Length: 337
Image 1 (cartoon, rainbow, N blue to C red):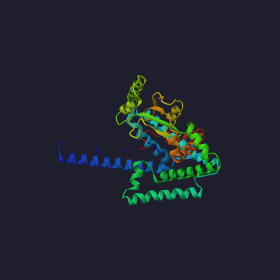
Image 2: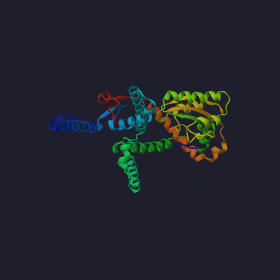
Image 3: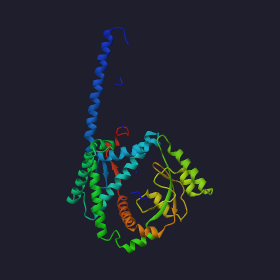
Image 4: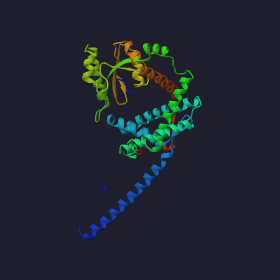
């Protein structure tokens, strides 16, 4: 099973009533005018730098897209607004470093987002998406707004995707990503692919993150008490795409910390409770079937090669730091909308 995660506003005489209505109406108009001016200024700020990652300038609308999507994911499990803002900013900065890690690694082999073939591929993908929405009678602009994106942000993300594909081909051609089938089969039969299952306790709407930790600890205690893994997985796990039979996964197909923990497990062994931003996971490593690997070699080979690329991107990302601009530093979480 492959996994490829927004006017409020009675008296003695009619004159008094009319006067009050006139004042109230004036106040509402002023409020609307001020609000409209502020909103226009905010929208105009989308091109303002939110900060830098390495030598790359991060426009505010790109930062905003990541920030608002992560906040939507995390807000149900965090009631402290200040703590939520800090956590979302940290998650956003990490994601941006990963994005520019791709750009940085590509630059190290003389590939750039401005390359003509990269720009053409990104433009073609954008046109294809727009055509799909038109033919499906769906509103593309509305979809972008729902995802807190401007079209320029979406186009840039498509550009990085196209750049990553070109980088992948370049690294394979240079030998930095293995291509020999015999070597790849050996890698997959070793630790290049893991057969894993997990119990996933998700932070649902209105659920507190720490309360779900207790649920995960309860599941772990039952496993330690001798309960069969399949039984506990079926009883507790909230991942509809994963059951006790597991899936064959390569690096990059699940959260890094969970995958790293799984690498240290023996077959049939399970991890402790692993905390993630939106829930808790208990990973179980299962025995591998080499016949399955042979039957699914092409898919597993591609996943493994992609995992090698992700590790190289992470290496580039680890040398990058997000430095926020004065403009972003002056915004509260409520200001970002």
